[in-house]
Every structure is written in C-alpha cells, then in structure tokens.
Image 1 (cartoon, rainbow, N blue to C red):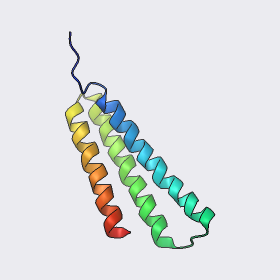
Image 2: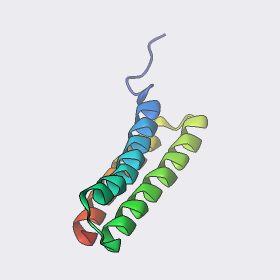
Image 3: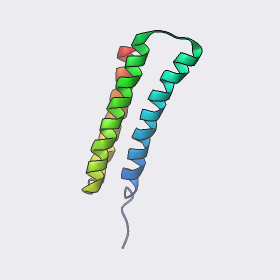
Image 4: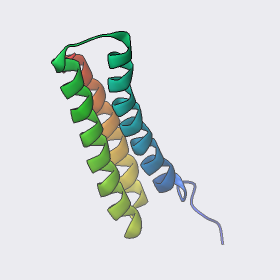
Length: 90
C-alpha cells in the first residue's frame, strides 16, 4: 500500500514548532549575554515561544487523531503569525 506524501509531515511540523520555541527562549539568553537590558524584547520572545508551544500542543493532539493536513495548516499559520508578530512588536 502506498503511503501518502505527507505521512511524516505531522512529526516534522511538531519538531519545527518546538525548535521555534527553543530558539525564541534561547534568544533571551543571547540578549542578556550581549548586555541588552530592555524588558520589551524579552516579553516579545517569551510570548512567541508560548505561542509556538501551544501550537505544538495543538499539533500533537491533531497528530494523535490522524489529522495531518490540519497540522500542516496550523504550522503554516503559526509561522506566518509569528513573523507578523515579530514585525509588529519588534
């Protein structure tokens, strides 16, 4: 039986969202190391990481129920939303 092309896309999407969350939290440590003492960038990155973690949780629940196309849509909307959030808040 032929597997669909997007069979592993759910796992990759969840991994991408968790990588985004880790990168956002890592950016806070980079800012502290460089000596930037502004509170606004920290809240921006923490909010972005929280959004990514919540999207990963939703994607995990969708993955359990076998909704792989919805996971791809959720991931695309989350990445696009985080880019817009960074442009507006940053």
